[in-house]
Length: 458
Ligand code: NAD
Ligand code: UGA
Picture 1 (cartoon, rainbow, N blue to C red):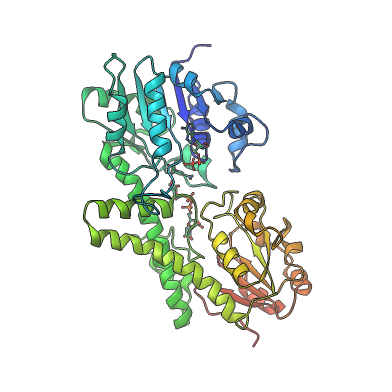
Picture 2 (picture 1 turned 60 degrees about the vertical axis):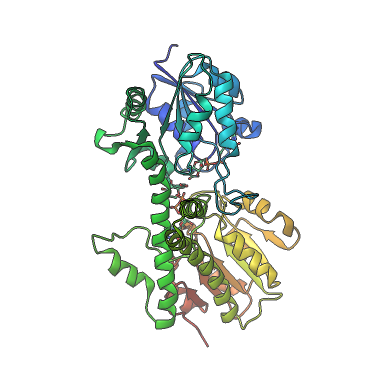
């Protein structure tokens, strides 16, 4: 079968896999190949047990795989055979040298650029899908355009805005598709080629264009704004606890102002996930690089409040449980950084579990989809943590339950039975405010929500 467009994506992760599956589903005239250096990941994409859990993903992959969607480890061949190349490799925070702990680590990114240069025999459009510091496209262009053999590369920025757990819905009905390009004849032509792909299913008014630097920066700024809302409401949750106000009531009242809006105002144990912290730190680093210390300081505080909120949650547990957790069983309900994903990257649960272990608590971890990742996150604690999938059995014999991920299943459990199986007095720390607190209190639990007065029996 001949295809009108041949698309490659380098990086078969949480973004590369789902994004390309959606393009393949919506564009049967395109052949889409996803490559990765990790052979186990590719084998999993080619199996019935996909490497990531995402609602709706299995069906999408099943419908397109080996029709016009292919997963492979043949990077060199992929580069040679395709004309449009998305790069969706990981861009974590740098852990060494200059900018360690702040700047983006661009080594995977640069390696990819060099591979594209080495194996390309024809001209290509190269698309930044990864989240990158502003002006990365310039570096990409400089690497790619260093040969004068008639092979040309047009670099576009097309950041991804999907959120895990809702990735398929976000990809199918995106708020916007952003394409940044050079304002040259070639740049605009490349931009149109990419816009045409999205036009197969995205309404034209949702496909927006800009200069490359604005596009790169918009991605960092979007994540910073979203995270800032969470830190804002979490900061207020601390005040609510002191002032006997209820953060859920405050957030509802504030969010009904149409200029503010209701989303991303849920107080919690803090935001997790692979991107918010890394992208804000990246933004902070960029501001410092450009000498904008006040701006850097402003955004850095979003991360500081997030750290504060996680530590505050542990301290509240300690305070409520008579200032000692040593030898007490504490069951963590949820380990994923949010519901409907198995991803635990930067999950507040990792920090909380480690702090509880430091206090010599006996920790039991429960999660419907993230236990495998939780085991590897706490691998160095082997023997000190138990992993139990069923939340009811996990809580048995414990003194406290800390609800860390807002999985729906936790709402409908038999709390009477759970209470009777636990050590007394029994505590629930609802880090997501999703349980029926009054009902749990009436059963006998001491209930500590976030940003609301606790319900105590003593
Ligand atoms: P990931 O770690 O899940 O996937 C990246 C993949 O790239 C890995 O499988 C890795 O093996 C592969 N890789 C690395 N170097 C390679 C190379 N030289 N050749 C081939 N493959 C290589 O990361 P992710 O969560 O998919 O994120 C990718 C990018 O997208 C990041 O920049 C991230 O900030 C951004 N992003 C992520 C999300 C999200 O929800 N996870 C959303 C929007 C944007
Ligand atoms: C986030 C953004 O929402 C995406 O637009 C972006 O593409 C992505 O980062 C990225 O660049 O990686 P994601 O991290 O997958 O997506 O999930 P979110 O829904 O944003 O949740 C992030 C964290 O904030 C979670 O830990 C969640 O529990 C927490 N959160 C979210 C709150 O604590 N309160 C809220 O009101 C909302």
